[in-house]
Length: 94
Image (cartoon, rainbow, N blue to C red):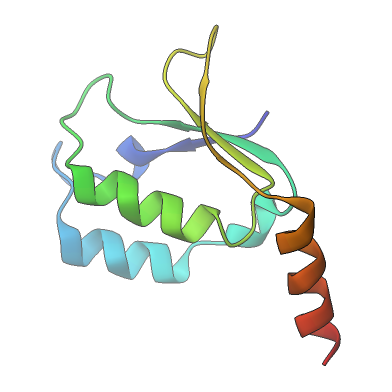
């Protein structure tokens, strides 16, 4: 299962909103297409709520499922439904 590590976007141990926005705009989100992605990042730095929300907003566009929490027992926070996936495919063909 691929991981998304919010710590990778920290500067000097802090997540700064504008820097994270800029980095997310450049990030290759396609690597998570149709995969289950586990979000990490609260181990060594404080992660503000907005960072999790922004991460979920980006990942929900490509990932099949997003989980959070302990890797041994992850909590699902997003699961793409079949109808949503079909609608996205139909829109891409138009």
